Length: 180
Ligand code: SF4
Image 1 (cartoon, protein in one colour):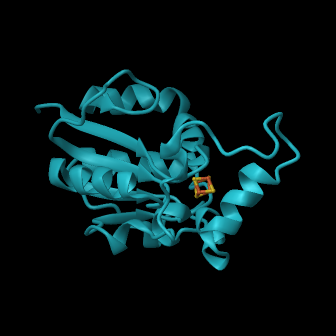
Image 2 (image 1 turned 180 degrees about the vertical axis):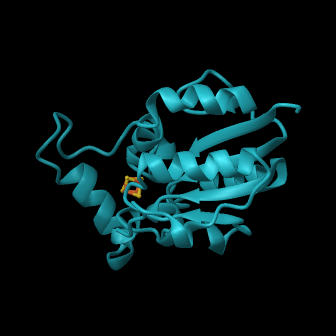
């Protein structure tokens, strides 16, 4: 059987979903028998080639994220929303209750936890945020959802293993599935 290609991408999230992915531990060896991981925050792939599955952590928070998720959709047979931020904005979407400028001021100008108190960041890209954070499915068609904050490693492994063996995962029968 020809090896498939997997990518994982991190948009507006905290990296916790990728930490859970790493908790697959030695079972990653079973997965890499079936697929190459061609792009991921923990490998050095710079471009996203055409892939079979892309796991996407995090919400869409900026026009840069919008461009990225549209490109991911174009390149991927299956797009899997990984974790509650990708599915429903979750923690990332908490800023939707406030005006964006107030959020920026709180994070940068009024922050007492950094040594640049009172200053905006030097890099303008950090301030190019959309007014509202949205989940993936408001921008693209999502093929599958793995809920949880973060999803458990067991569920991530199960879903990947099913897709890589040309089966559709059935989460209705999966223990350790969690919401929030
Ligand atoms: S779902 Fe939870 S663990 Fe995953 S990126 Fe969001 S806050 Fe972090």
